[in-house]
Length: 244
Image (cartoon, rainbow, N blue to C red; front, side, top):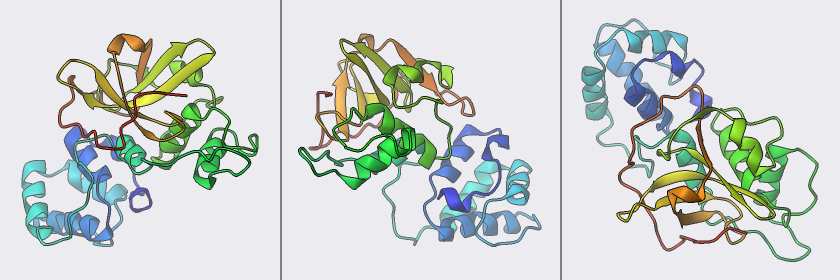
């Protein structure tokens, strides 16, 4: 969806509207949104790209009415697997679930892309610790910045702004031999948090942790920090409970 957003969504005051737009996956959805704005009297071009003019129009209408029209227009579109209320970078991370490091001389090209996102051309093999590289890849793919030295887990301590263990927070964990970094994906009934991360058992998967396992939680500077606890988590058969 990133290529369909050409304007600054951060200018929208309504966090739910920002989340819904970022969760759109097809041009049919963006066109439906623009058509809703036209029905509400806004003179904009219906081209499927959310640019500055469309964003300014959204700021000047009743958002609840706009989304009601939008839902009518998209009722028959194929359903997508994105949760519109989940942070868009978390949704990016979920699409990588199951990516696994190849043990031995061969390398998984996708893991190498993660490492290149953190430090292009520096690492030759996927057996390099890559939890922080995975977070770098997710943030860049979501249109968000990363730390200057982003291949180290602890470098994420200075990224963004401080927050609690909220949905979408980057969680930084200290441990012997180095740190670990993952993204908060929800909370279990017993209070533990579920995080999606890379290099967790050599794979991108879910892991469960005590909140106290982490020393820091950080959130993108451009985004509004949500309330905790998060709701509606999904933990499936790909869930992993360790990091390596």
